[in-house]
Length: 341
Image (tube, rainbow, N blue to C red; front, side, top):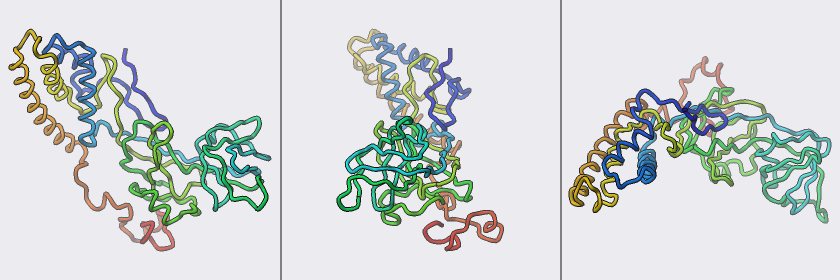
């Protein structure tokens, strides 16, 4: 039975079926490698294979690890009021209708206090639980304050398998989004995060509590919309015999390195070869593996060029201009030059 791989929300995942180009599944790769040294158990060889493929995945952005996804931006929530308490991470809602869909979104009561992420919601009590205690400021001699607020999605967890985003588009504005912005740049341009709704860049954030890849979408969207995107991913470890390598990752290349590994595994008691021959053969297979990796690299560049780019690909602000472009795209006050591009 084919077991589909791990799936992540808002990502188009592989089905688990064997791609025509893959030649061998995990069990077949294991069997071929084991035949070179019966003293290497299947468990040992499977560990070797997972190490080898992780090294291969790290060498470049392989076409087979490229995935289609979307960043879904919910509408802002502002109804009612919120009561915040100094040094407490509990926010009490008044005339609100908060629910669990708000978990992971960001809560603010003004522009001179930090942005807090909501980690839980008590629906019946209409309370938000924040990631950190609310720290003010408050009027003199007050420990609580009832005030207006807004809840928006500023930070987005794109999935634990994301290595980095390749491209993203704001389809409402008609712009390719900038992907190389940093928190330092955002904090210089808009430390209060006062700009809203017209999102152009994504800026990487520190890993979330579970080690996932989060980004900040700036300015924070206030209306429901979705940004189509693509990203390079980290495939899961191979476990079952029918598990597949990512498409276009050649199984025969993995086998070459696996054979070198098993020939070095307890070579003194390998019944097929003397220790000297086993080590010599392992060196030969290492060389064949390195040559095959170079071939696979070239083949991968023919699928989708990533090692080199042209200027127009890397600069979102590159535009053809003209009346048609102006009529079909959101044009900022600086007419398309400067910060927004």
